Image 1 (cartoon, rainbow over the protein chains, first blue to last red):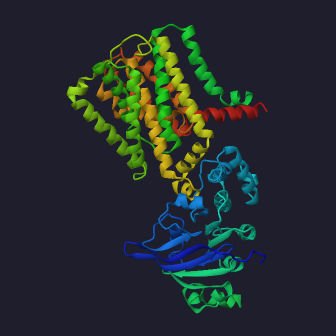
Image 2 (image 1 turned 90 degrees about the vertical axis):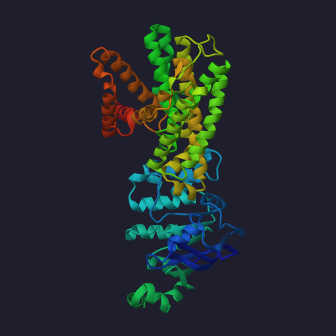
Length: 250
Length: 325
């Protein structure tokens, strides 16, 4: 990969724990993401991946631990303030502004950095092209098929000009062609210098994309390493991948 | 310029006609209907700022209407002050009440928010109808008529133009909400609050601002209505009927559209005026029949044109443009 070499720490999690009543969804997770990283997060359903995103992005306040973004403690900041700092996320269950056009959806994201609607509209057009949504710019968001709604989710987040982007299963439910296009998009964004954390179930995608993979299980980080290290990690195979995957990869 | 005229042909038609009518018609009954159509339209536009543009559907906006009506009426009747001063005080009180209700919208969603707004207007009804020493309680208070613009003692023609000015102003405010940075971001909050926050939009603050502004705009019309009609009855100005009316005009006309509230008001107000006049003589048992017609119109609109009359108009226009292309 021709991605730039990782720089200084951009996001740091220190012993982050989030409980819901008696259930501990995330338990003592520490993680460092450096500028230019592309980190994959894997784990079975209910492992706490999305909860971790919600904590990082300010949707949940963690019960313990600290989240630092770009040298600043953001643990107690609301989601919109964190987004303004340059850390934004997409949603696993896509949340388009359904009654608005694709163009307006993306423009609302661009308005976060722009004082005028005209400038934001120009920004939006560029992002729409990058994401391959050009032919659908005038369509109502709710009328789009899933693959395009996933792409809209990414486009809208990109329009806020983030430095760190959290992608929550933007590849789930896509056909092979759509999947290839999405992988290509994520690669291009990364090559242009964007730092990304990607939650994904599609192992082939995450293995090809990520420089580093983190495995969550029952809310705990049980492994972290290069895709190759992770694929051969005994705990990961037992908890998630299964023997078939190892055989198939071999 | 030409494209702006073409885009707003509906508003031009309606407001232009309203401006011309007093020149051509001197019938007091007709002008009275026109003032009411414009005022009810402006009130629905005020409701639309919260209900249509911010997605905070209130069924308690009569509270702010009543605050505006009572502020001016009490100030005039008890302290002989100008209703304009009363209007300002009403706006100040409504800003406070609106901010409180807006804050509530961050705790209560959808139907729970709507119910809490009803409760709020009912509390004000109880205060107004029981605080006899100050408000004259359930008897209501007559608003003193003193001729002149400063005291809002105006003739029918002047009232038409005053109501028209307010209507156009409120229409313009809604239009601004459709094209401004604030308006676009508010639309994002209405469509999906979580997604809006992910894009850096302070969703809660925007909702509070929208509901507060909506309350103040409603209050202004409450004052005007009280001065126009000349009597404030607590059971009317704080009634759920009235709150529902604000919402219904906007829903029938087209929620979240600038012209919708006025289209809804034209249909409903004239229908009501007509039915009341033509059925009142028939039998005393029929006096409430306009309510049934009201309900039927609502059902038809929700079933066949859920986007409202404004949506229907733009749909027909698109078809016409296509046919002539």
